[in-house]
Image (cartoon, rainbow, N blue to C red; front, side, top):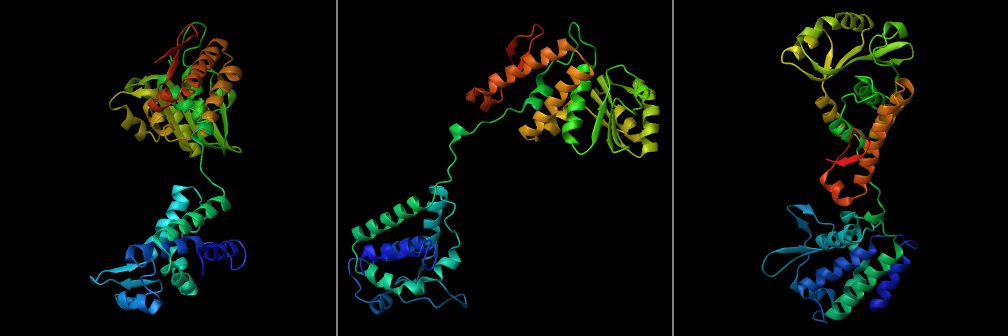
Length: 356
């Protein structure tokens, strides 16, 4: 049997015939196995001569051995399994042909069906075996499509909401309403984190009772209140806690989740708020949670912020300042070096982009 005939048998049964897609790896495994043992160049005329030098293993540790293995003169053993795994990894990981089977046990136990290959390979030279292996590899690479990813075609969306939380100046500028930036931020967070709920929000300093809300931001499942948040764009201390009593009472009546979202909390305030049955969240807490969000979820949050500022708060100055910030983020994300180092961009008060 010639190398070309071995190759043709592999081709004929790869996707047709016996449909044994593992055959290229099995043939390469036999080639590597025989080469490592020096069983080339006609050193052994028959399989019996080969087994006389390298006795076949029938069992390992008392268990029957399905694959081809031999005992070498020095007492060590060798099987074709690692050669098959190496070939499969070369096709799959090395050349991104993930359609190639990695099932080593299934493939190598079929070696007995290809004794005629082994006999033919024993007679071949090192050069002929290497050429046969190269031809087999070339066949598989041509037959199976590459699933390699071209990094130059991958567009990575920036973590816009995370950068907004970390870098955007929430302090009110000329023409903006104090507290609007943070209320919009919290609305964006809840809108993205709870897409299964109907989220309602009002303008800053608009009474919740007037719009039949419990907190500044309510999230409902139909008519049932599930979550409500009071937003405080400042550091909450113990002096503010009495103002939260009514909110805590309503939350308890609705059996809902009540959030107090502030820039930060003074020592002692957190424990007291929790004792009221409410959950305190700081700006840092939001950042830590959003850090593991995917970019699409962050886009939902950021778009919700823009919706709030433009249509609920109707603050053109704040809207333009946020848009300028986002343009800076997108410009920074286009630069691969800046993206890899996590550089963020803030919008200055005059609307220009200033790298941080």
